[in-house]
Length: 286
Ligand SMILES: Nc1ncnc2c1ncn2[C@@H]1O[C@H](COP(=O)(O)OP(=O)(O)O)[C@@H](O)[C@H]1O
Ligand SMILES: [Mg+2]
Image (cartoon, rainbow, N blue to C red; front, side, top):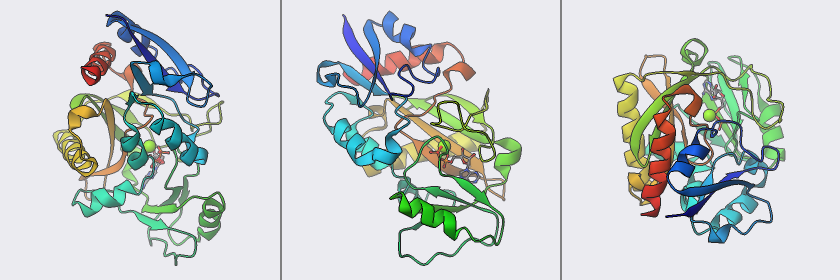
């Protein structure tokens, strides 16, 4: 059975960032004819069997245009509704309200009064990827200028206490394919890294990791709650990456749930992960 799969990128990185190098042959072996295309290219995406968001790193500054494009693609993975919900980190507040352990998060819109945490903290855009626009501040610092700069760019600002475990342990990314746990990898602290040559994301330092039981248990709860909020089954998510950090009490906290363009760590895990990904694409089309 021959089918077409388009891996979606952006103009600056037309063939992705390398994370998917093993995915292309895996999809090919499972019967797909695979190509890459930037989401804002003139290609007609409507006839492809699967259109898979992989390296659309540039949507943050053009989110309405990106979402309109997502809605025009009938076979988008993950779906446009999932992308709409997931590309604004205010979903973290919904997950917090649903009772999940999430890094404490407050949203600041233009005109809102701001109170900065009394400990070290982070200010970042609620719509953002690749760590762009995220900055770390010392306890007691006045970050109003950074908040104002994010507002001037049209963003809502997001404030979180800095989780210092990130400096020693990094964050743990747990990858789910078709709603089932696949593998995990570790990501070193980002704030302090240099920008990648493409200017799209801060350079990431990734390493293989095996997750502790409490981190997996949290990731499972996150997938259950997020899919309930979205009104879908976990299995309808081609991929999900749950980013976990440890709080001051040592317990795992959700930092981010990536359903749109995550690095999935294929170079940091067993080669069969790419096969599981291709198999999960087949499952989405079944
Ligand atoms: N509250 C936080 N505590 C510690 N580090 C943080 C915090 N928020 C962000 N960071 C650092 O900034 C990086 C980017 O922030 P993140 O929320 O993951 O956004 P994105 O990856 O979508 O740009 C993280 O990988 C982490 O290294
Ligand atoms: Mg992140």
